[in-house]
Length: 427
Ligand SMILES: *Cc1c(COP(=O)(O)O)cnc(C)c1O
Image (cartoon, rainbow, N blue to C red; front, side):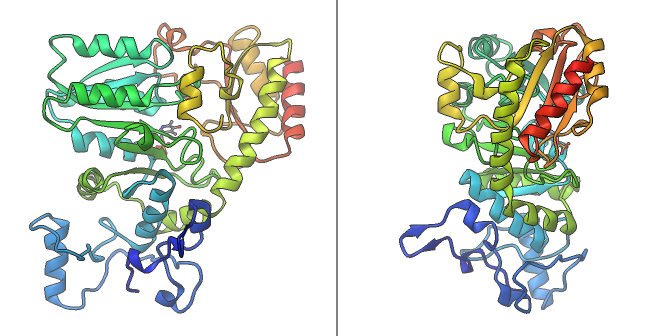
């Protein structure tokens, strides 16, 4: 197999092909593998070099011992560094965000950790939005400080920009900004963070070095939000969620410009966080139906959110599709997101007892963490995904004992609603 990205088509004449049309074939040609129209699984740990000279040249590039020559690309060496299933997957993943390059990792957390450790050094400050995914929260607040990295949070939602500015203008902070990490929409509240504003702050406090803005785009991306368009440098995914989409694998990815992603790929090689060929192949298959799944889930979620908003046992619904003109983040929502996605959180009338009764009564929807899969899932952020955040701090981030998070799947929406309706009756 002689794989070269430039051998595969991205346009027909002047007509540029859309990502969904490229998901079935981009980056691969059947003649490379006995005419197989699907890319085989390259279940191998290592790759034979044609000559010793070739092996030497590959290692020089892999270890950065010399500059890449024009037209030269890193050959296949060993599956911790690269593998055809991962490389083809990375080419296809980049297309949705219009990025130059991608790096696929063993999990969303591996993608986040590999990215943070590529750019942060002792003495740096990491500015991050709050709330973030529970695992990210733990990594940022408990692990990074052990490496001499100071972390400062600011709230997602309308008060975020002013709070972020205030934090950065502190004298002890303003010349130490190393990176900005945000999650938008925020999990589980769907509050938004202004990506363009974060890019402005990164430029303002850069002190001559590159301060990268990384956006966890797991909730809406890669279909309904494209952070690079608003000045973000890196876009991170838990590919376990919508990209994988079938709740049967764990993976993560980061996409962005060649210059930054190459640094992440180097860190990935030495932390050993690259994903494997089998997961890569499963993700290639998942990408073919990504748009179909996300669109169907998004439509279903609209019906579910409307039903919840009208129900007497529901106090509040957090759903992007319900943001109206009088909402303080209306403009930002219209600018930054192209659709509301399929994550819905709601507060049941009462507290933890009522929330648990509802969750225990569900019959079609599974009681499980994770999201973005074909099946609908429900969970209790306060005691599950976000239990690491002290109970006293949770309400400040909108995580109340009555809050339930739903990830809406591809079932018939009337069946999902029937299940929610009977479970609300039980509560
Ligand atoms: C799940 C999730 C992660 C972590 O991803 P894993 O694949 O579980 O490691 C990170 N960010 C968000 C928003 C998530 O939902």
